[in-house]
Amino acid sequence: MGSDDYRAKSLLHLALAHAEPDLANKARHLTLAQSYIRLAYIADKNATADLVYETPLRPTVPGAQPIPQQRQQQQQREKPKPDEP
Image (cartoon, rainbow, N blue to C red; front, side, top):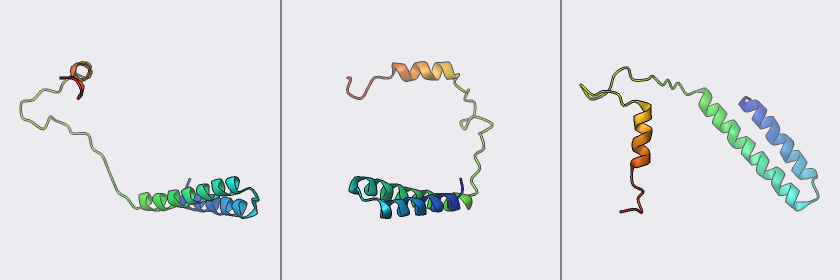
């Protein structure tokens, strides 16, 4: 969904809010309209972002061996919780 689609949905909810006699439903439509405007802003912002993630090819410390995922999970379970001594 593009930013124009979000703006159209926002306008739809503004119109529904304007026609709604019930204040609770009017508030819901206004909240949705505001949320769609925020999504349109974010979509515009993301459309100009040129971010690329590249997985590192080697460990950052020379001579370090990557830790197998199973061992990582086991180490995480063994860590004491902050409230434990």
